[in-house]
Amino acid sequence: MPGDRLTQQDRRQIADGLAGGLTYAEIARRLKRPTSTVTREVMRNGGPGAYRADQAQRAADRPVHRRRTTPAAARGDADAYGRDLRTVREVAGRLTDLLVQAGIPQMMARVLAALYTTDSGSLTSAELVQRLQVSPASISKAVGYLEAQELIRRERDPRRRAERYVIDDDVWYQAMVASARANALLADTARQSAHTLGPATPAGVRLENMSQFLARVGDDLVRSAEHWRQVYTTPQTSEHG
Image 1 (cartoon, rainbow, N blue to C red):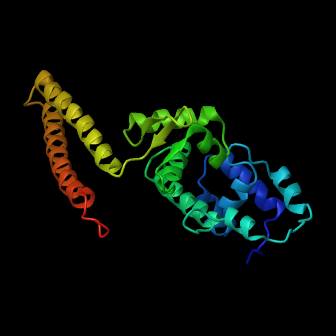
Image 2: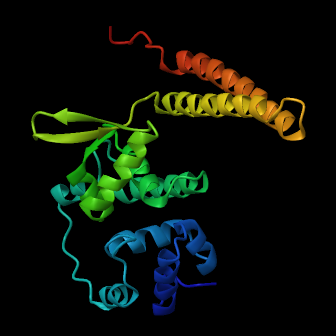
Image 3: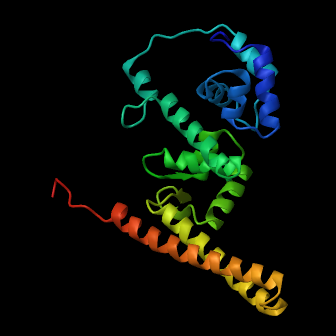
């Protein structure tokens, strides 16, 4: 069983895994370590884009000068709801891994997870850069992708004269409707192609079946999304009036 401390070889495997595009969970499985251990190690040492095994090892070898913890310092290690920030980062790391497995690119998944685990549901570009320890260009690219997928939106923050990236409560409804629209266009194209190639030919039949399947599944998806959106986003009467 591995000890609590990561070895230099562990750190080299982490660096190799990041370079190979592996998720924290995949790296952790190779090391037989908890995912949270890998997440903390990477975030402590510059994030996935800047992690270097040798630098991380030197940082780990430096003697730790512990200061007495004051109440103010203790508050700095917690968010507005008293949660340990390490716990918040671990939750974001697990969510990132699942989003990556669902097909979202890693940097885009990290931005989405950061927004989901922020109580305000919004962050500026500068806040995302600081939180994820990546370049502004990486954030810009990720935001562009997520906006195109209708997973986030941007709004102006007049106090900071900056744009904030916002995740709405009905973001998955919007994403499913966008997916249904894309499937509807594909269904129309398949139907037209079936008629062009001949509806009685094997290719025509295949395309017509594809069109019918996508159209009907898309209709069902939109109806289901509409129903559950009303269930989970209908304003409820506040107990405080």
